[in-house]
Image (cartoon, rainbow, N blue to C red; front, side, top):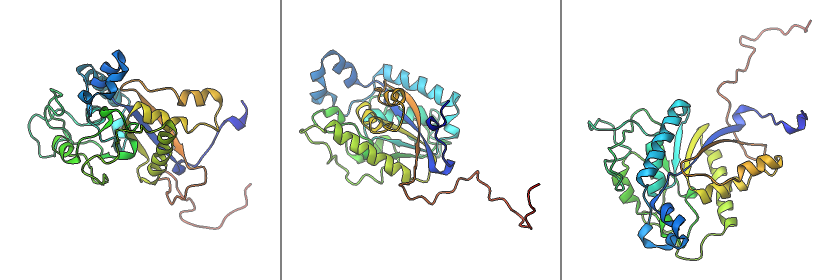
Length: 271
């Protein structure tokens, strides 16, 4: 094997990111039958279908079997109903039937889900971030509700870094171009790097994730580049690593590193 095809980096210059596309939404079903349905107000801020919730349950089982909940320090979610439902269903706590002391991640039947409340106990924090929203414009399914409405349905999610209560980013036209989505993806990855957490889950959308991943891999072999740019299926999870190759200032120190020479004494010549 050619050593030039292998990269080696200090661990403190890496972050593990678990990328997830939302489960099946009502707009996906309608759009597969007739693409013009994506332009219909009937699918404004589309919720998950019953099949979508089954997909979420299966992802939840995988997250637990892979012990991801023990590793993920933060769940970032696009502030749209289908992504929030997917995130709390996959990474949230158990069913919250007894009204425990903790604020619920999701109240019962949120977004016409016909699902019980979901607890926020023993799970990582959830943070809503507009940068990872779906391609903006034209499609009402990608327009969000007010933060006030979401907070009532998902009380334990942190919406504090969203600047406007109403959706000021979505416009009827023009639709965001693939190049603009890709640039937003790069901006999002740079923002992720500023976070202190080392292992983060991101629940987002097909168009955004494709734009983000297609912006990277130019220094990889063609098959890796191709792997990165495959569109996500509903409720698919892919884990990637982002690496600071020297252009980003960082003060982070890997917690597993040990400085050595404790206690300090005279060095002896190696024998």
